[in-house]
Image (cartoon, rainbow, N blue to C red; front, side, top):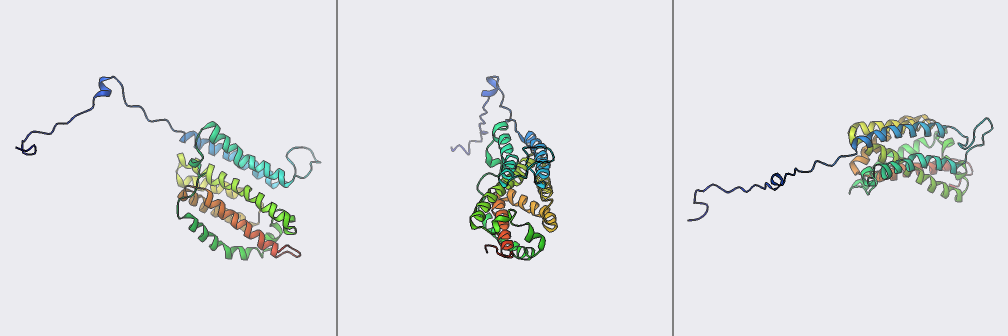
Length: 255
């Protein structure tokens, strides 16, 4: 007679080794979600307030009084890179001891390079229009010398590209991925977009207003791509193109 026809109930073997040994299954490992989100909110807010105040000024941070000298572009970079990248790095790697990919510091998921190109193509007509506005022609490039010297143009665009890399890491990496750990995607996108827009105060009004919406789109893109790299490439491409268009409109510009 076969086993299936024997009519005997199946034998269930239960592993009672943990009960017999007096041990219990290990508790889930604690997460850093709440502390990370709190740190992103508090430190992010302090950094945004400080850098907004600093960037709107023109004087060096290393002296005080009524006769302070004007800051250099290099000082501007050092101060901003410290706030936008160095301090978040110390928190991520030194305090929380986490990997950078948890904050979007990783290659994007497949397919998001094409989406980035689509966004850039959609922005080209807008850039062609606003580059004709007097406010934009006077503002860009941020270092006026770059409009009249090829050597300084390349130096400025590379340095400014690194500066924007730090911006995107801070907003679409540290803030977006840090805040979403506890607050969720929507709140993280809105909070970092608000901070991103605030730091555009002092730019031409159309750019200031649109930066809130642009920050939200870049935050959405970072979460979907699991990386802030596409946002950085888009941001840098837009800034570079606007600089070139603004230089082209200047008398005696290099273009």
